Amino acid sequence: MGWDWIVLLPPIIAIVLALWTRQVYLSLITGLWIGTTILGNGNPLTGLQGMADALVDVFSSPSNTRIIIFSTLVGGLIALVQVSGGVAAFALWVQSKGWGRSRRSAELLAWFIGIVIFVESSITSLIVGTLSRPFFDKLRLPREKLAYYCDATSAPVCMAIPLNGWGAFVLGLLFAQGYEGDAVGLLVASIPFNLYSWLAIAFTLVLALTGWSFGSMRRAEQRAAETGAVNRPGSTPMIADEITELTPVRPEVARATDLLIPVGIMISMIFVGLYITGEGNLMEGSGSTSVLWGVGAAIGVAILLYFLPRQGAPLMGVGQSTEFTLKGASGLIGVVGLLVLAFALGDVSRELKMGDYMVRVLGGDLPVWWVPALVFVLGCVVSFTLGSSWTAFAILMPLTLPLAEALGIAVPLMLGAVLSGGIYGDHASPLSDTSIISSMAAACDHVDHINTQLPYTLVVGGLTALGFLVAGLVA
Image 1 (cartoon, helix red, strand yellow):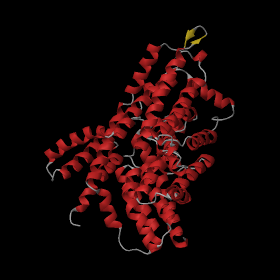
Image 2: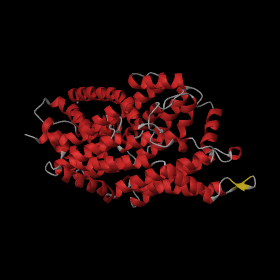
Image 3: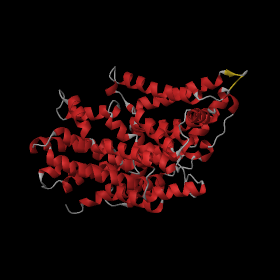
Image 4: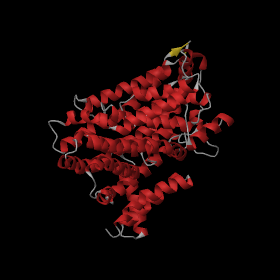
């Protein structure tokens, strides 16, 4: 294969540099420049020009653009519900019901919210972070732990309960492979074999129940418990402190509904968006369009809600609400920049056909019972380096499903291996938009989030690989 391995350099260098130096923006720019230089036949100046074009081309994708706008508007919504007093009022209400008073109940609450909100991965992360942050901070639980709950209950839950855009995307790929008449049945049959998703959900529940921790997460918990520093000193949270620490304008009239109504509108509007964009079929709707509609509707309803008179005066005037919305949006410039760089690096890696190279390298002859585990590991590598589970699905399904039929392997088992491998990267990769939004939702440093959750994801990934080895033997 000669120098074909060079296509692996851009994402690998970006990831290693980010974890080593903690300079995630510079690391992504470096990886992107190396990738565009390779595409430019090794000319670094052509690479610089290509890098600029790649960054601009990110916005040529409607889905990417919607996610970027959504991420900006999320900052405005967070600021609004924070300054309305809705977050604080909700925390008091939950504590009055006996929740959020102990470490176990706070972590179980975060886990439960993540399981219930399975409509879209970004929305799951946002709601888990927004609702749980007051409890975690009060109990001196590190933001890294909250970011882990945001991440572990987003993509894994959305793929384990695929009544959303994730399921629709997989069905589309199955249709493309000729499974038109049996696509839904095949997806349903693969759900038990989506081992990584189920193990990630179960592992997170065990952590919540037992308080067990290890590795860098344990050190983060010790730091927070001993010093009260919920973020590492010197870290750079993905959302500015001046947004997360906004004080209510009129705390004496704040209500839990000031938070719950906008959140409820956002979730409801996502279903409406999926129904409209799917022309009556929720499973065929556009997830990126729906979340954008949802957060926009939530902001609009929040502004109107806070303008209604309370004890003789509005909670906030329209102008004041607009000012806080813009302030919140400006606090997420870092998230937007990180998303643009991650999307551009993913596009360049796909242009280099990195996934195809990995398939060729790891596609040697092996005993049949090894194949599901190998497909899972291959999916992990591809999705981790690209930061995209959907890309891993699109690369591996056309190759692995026909292979399963040829080797006599159960197709639902092979599909479960593909889905599990893709979900691993979406959960664990620093390039994943889900991981980036989880860091934002928890107001955590992104590299700290990746460093602390990586040992956990490796444990779950190892158990998943073992599970597929066993399944390959008995299936």
